Image 1 (cartoon, helix red, strand yellow):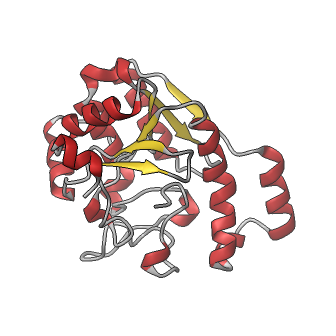
Image 2 (tube, helix red, strand yellow):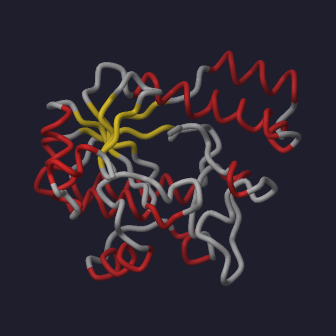
Image 3 (tube, one colour):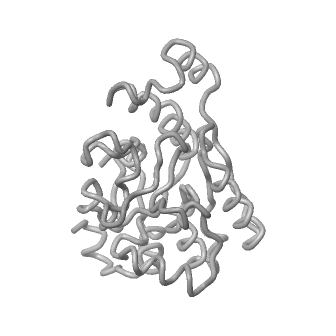
Length: 230
């Protein structure tokens, strides 16, 4: 358990956000991938939308359905989304030298692709921030089962990292989303419990883990893109 949790006793999403903002400062930024978790956070904190900003990373390979959620959120909440893109020259060089699907050749190549399309834009998105907020939960995967609600992100300049849904289960998230009739990615209805770049995301079979459809050709312990190094 983190020192922040011991000090605050925060466990509900609203309490975690409040404690995180107190610890971090005024400039909190939500990293939004338009997952059901991110949509739930925006709705839960809809009365506090003036207390954090929202950004998204367009990797150049997002499904059309993801953009539809972005539009729906903007309309529903009057939400301004700051978009960040990979550096053009870096992507041109990668695809010219290694082809369009080098990420499937090795773990090293996949991490290189994620670093260019996601991690580098994240650095720019967080520049000058006091803290950032994510939709991660402990129950999502083996790479996240030790997640704390409030952490120090040493990789990104010792920013305070706030995870309001740390203790929520998948059932908690979906019950809330359905009860509130929130705008959701249509791919969820097609068996995609976790949605990222189109070439790296697939539907999963019944009984598989939530993130089994992400980089499915890799071992489970490797299935992170580098945005959430811990």
